[in-house]
Structure formats: structure tokens, C-alpha cells
Length: 292
Image 1 (cartoon, rainbow, N blue to C red):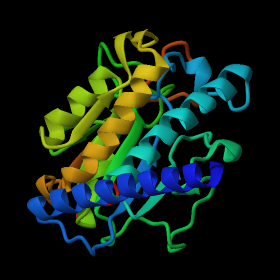
Image 2: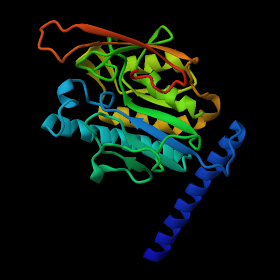
Image 3: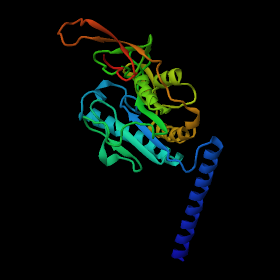
Image 4: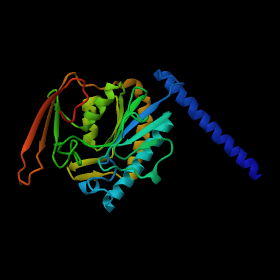
């Protein structure tokens, strides 16, 4: 009797999986996506935009109790995204640890993806973003420096308060990362972070992309936090949807040549009022956006 019951459960599960596949295939056909095509997704990650993170003590110094806890929040948010991408139809997922002090915790890695961490990350090792990828996900990101309601907002260096302009438009790390993908012909399909980050993403990249807000900023180190159960459900559903919007999303590129400007505080001196340095340069190919 027990064996018959187990066989029945297996048949039911098999039918459910078959139904899921039929539905997925139907959606892809309607959207014009080849069913046989490989759907490779590249995930660039940061720490400031994940659930429960709202102060620099959680992000700046590696392996403190607060940082370790924040890294756990990161891994749990990321697991929800991986599950969503896989259930949405992704056939391969490459995840790159983009936070300065590195974040990934190996024993918390969700199956179904490849995780790249550590420094330096040399090019040409099979994980670099290239034209074989179907879409880019910017996970756990933050708004650009100077955003009033941007939780932990900064652009590259939070202490030196870096600011960047490209062709006269102030831009943050989202534009810097997405424009690199655009040079490879890879479209942005999803952004996760606080409300200000999602707003910035839509402003630059349009309404076609999927955005998932993990919290709402009050100031640079204050936020309205959302319960983890709610954010992770939203991250999962958003990631599933992100696969479906691939045909609507176009690669983002800056007009070449790019006129670049950078401002930052000179922290090499011990002055209580450090000098603000300005540098300007032109990027012919759109690659050297961070420094001349």
C-alpha cells in the first residue's frame, strides 16, 4: 500500500513538472524566445541593497559580527533570486561578488548557479560577461552618491564621496555596470535594492526592466525595512518575471566618445576639510569610466 502511495505521489509530481514545462514553453513561444536556446544570466552583486542592511558598519569592515550577519542576509536574498531565475527558465547563472570586501558565504550557496568571489578576478576564466549571456541582473545595489533617500548611497568610494558625470549627466554604479554590459550587447533585465535604487534604474534604463525594492530609505543610514519573508518572495517572483522580459529589454550604451568627469575628496591629507579634486577625461571606447 505504501509503495502504491509513493508511486502515485511520484506520478503527481511528474505531471506537475510537465505542466510547468508546457506553460514555460508556451510563454517563450509567444514572446519569440527559442525554446532550444540557452538562457545564460549574469548577476552582478553588491551588499548595500540587500534586505536588512542600512548602516555602513554592516558593509565596510570585513568579518565583524554585523558584517557577517549582513553577508547572511545577502546569501538568503540571493538564494531567492537564483530560485526565481531557474524556475523562470534560466539554463546557466553566473554570480559575481562585486562588493569591495567580498560577501559570499560558501555553505549558504543556493544550488543551480556558479559563484565567483575573491580578488583579483582575472579576465578570460569562463565567467567574464560577454555576448553569450541573455541578460544582466544587478543585485543588492544602491543609489548614486547624493541621493537624499538613498540608503548607503555612494558611487565607488563612500568615504571619498566620489561622484561621476558622463556626457554631462551624473551617474552611479548602476550606469557604470550596465554600460559595460551594453558594450557586449547584453541587456539589463532586473535591479534589486532600495526604493531610490529602483527609481534610478527606471530613470536610466526604462520601465521594461524588473525592479524589486528591499527597503525604503529615509536618509543615508536610516530606512523602513521590509520583513524578510516579504522581500524574498518579491525577489523570487521578480527573478522569474525577469526571464520573460528579456525580449523587451535592450542593451544600454553611452554615446561615444564619453566625456567623463569625476569629483572626490582628497583623503590622503589629515585636513579636517579635505580638498575636493576634479578630473576630466574622454573615453573613446566607453570602457575607462572610473578613472582617466
